[in-house]
Image 1 (cartoon, rainbow, N blue to C red):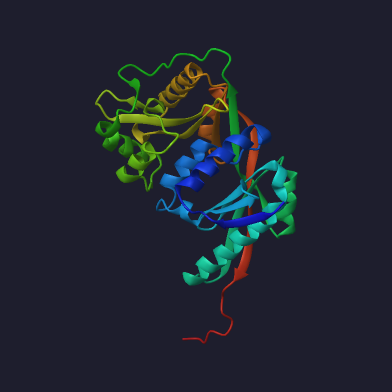
Image 2 (cartoon, rainbow, N blue to C red):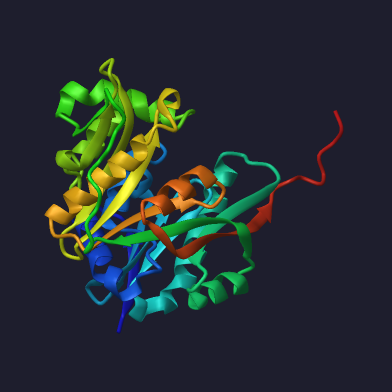
Length: 312
């Protein structure tokens, strides 16, 4: 079987990438590196919204079997489980790209690079270790799940607050404002959220907000629904700093899970960062329990410090 690779070439490739993620979810869960909703969110919010243009795709004959999604100093690898052997080539490409971009930017000192592996993914861990990466035991995303067969409580926001979905352009400014406060410092803009709203997986009825008594938005979440696998993914979830510890995020999670149930979803997922205990407590209380840990792995690729620099 011939394995080939090439650079991302546009929306037809994006459709192929989304289709691959739908295929590999049931084959890899709980070691799920990316869902279709995650990919939409990354594409229109990462960096300046152009990371997708740097992606590279690997094919077995004409079938997409993996892709590498690069960031500034890291890469995410999505691979069909029948083709794990391509991960070496994917990492080699991503590492070379990082050295090239860092050199062009005249970075001095060690050029660091990051990749990701679930603790249960021994194949990838072996590959990373062999390539000189070191596992960061304290740096990981908790992948969480809640089965949706059982009833989910109705949302119970505090008096004066209302849970509803975003109503398009009329709500855009308030929607961006609450995101920017919750994740300050944030690079979210009206243009980025408008692009998110135009992405393939986005549904306005699953872009939820808690409206405060003064009409501002106090909390928010987006739920991304994959009807093929009947799963929903919460990304992101946040609360304005002036409205925390009032149960608003819990109310939104309940609302989102009930809406997923009405769509026929089997499972709800969310990722939480290991070093964020309040978020962990929130998700645990909502029944979104940890099913896997996706660790950061780091290595220095080269050291660009010049030993022959003369003293000034």
